[in-house]
Image (cartoon, rainbow, N blue to C red; front, side):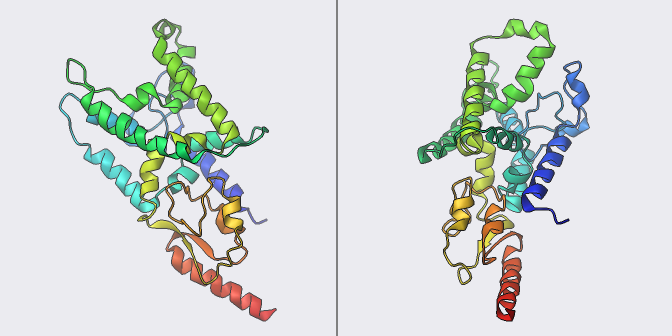
Length: 295
């Protein structure tokens, strides 16, 4: 039995989710894994404070280093993000991100679906520049330490994966609940409702990590390519794209998560995706032409 593309992608997403959150036993006592693997970053968005998390979140790590008493440029974290981005681009979002999988599950809840207003796409640019890069450096306390502003004020993944589980397990922590928690809880509720109604609402509007990877789609080794000679402009690829990207016009769009749905939908095999996508594309086109000629 041949596995469908969608099934293979979902299987890889589930495996990546399990690998990122392998310490499920920690939910029993509300402890946080602090082993040697926690010094390494997960390529996708996954809260450090989640009891099951086995790796650090790259956005959280970047803010922590930037906000230290003596500002240090995080060569490791920045190097990690650049390496993953240049190699895979936003493939990470479509195949490996734990929070991306949760968003897709939420979107399967049967409700009327909406399209995202394009203006909201630029909100994540503001979040990346202001909350991830600037505030941890400039908004410091009396000791000169900056706050991880995105994690502290916005990140719904942290509230869902870390805040709520820890509060439910540790009654003593509930005494610390204040306005900040309710602000983040409100953002989480908006995110959940948004993901139910709009495909990957968080990815498209709030996620700074996805933006970093998306900006490298154009130069990443793993890329999407369209053969203009083979393409018949039928529009099937743009119609099937849940991220509302037109692969023919903008194959390297910041919003493209390299899910591959457009590759499967193309009736002419004009779209290819992967490392060395151009070679695969030409091979597929030759195979298709040979098949057509033999009919």
